[in-house]
Amino acid sequence: MDLQELKVTRKAIAELLKYKNENYINELCNDHNAPKSGHDSYPLFEFIQWYIFSYLDGKHRGEVERLKAEKPQDDLARKSAELKELLIQEKKKILINAGAVESAWLNEISVISSYLDSVSIKASSKLLNIADQKTIKEILDKEINELKVKIADLRLDIHTTAT
Image (cartoon, rainbow, N blue to C red):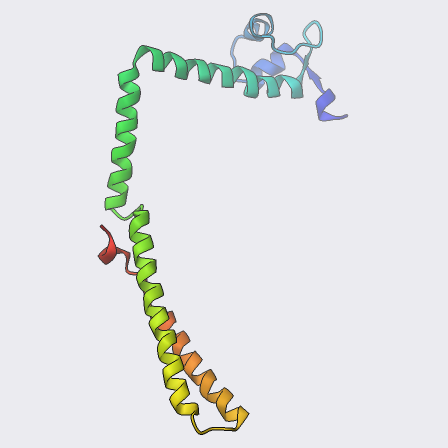
């Protein structure tokens, strides 16, 4: 049997949703348009989908709107508290300021760029009088490997660049 075709009793729906009074299921059908197949018969799959996506979502939205209308200062206080929490996390380095990260990366890129410039200067002086392709490749490979080691040893220093 397909799960979408499964029908259950009011008692089963009440137990599934942890309602002690199964008459509440009748109220959901009568007052909130919950799906019903017939007398004491409910489409399980459709009922659960309705309950989650319509009933609970509608209850939640209604509660949010009610709170906003009743106590807008509480909403402001909550948002202020959230902002303070983000600032505390940033100070504890749980969150990192995006500007600090960008500044640190720009610093590292500058260092890498200077390393690249130095490789061409060092390699050109070593290759000046060499004609053998294998020797040229070995020298270039050595310089590139030294550059890779220097780059691998770099550490992104966000703390000293944070503003």
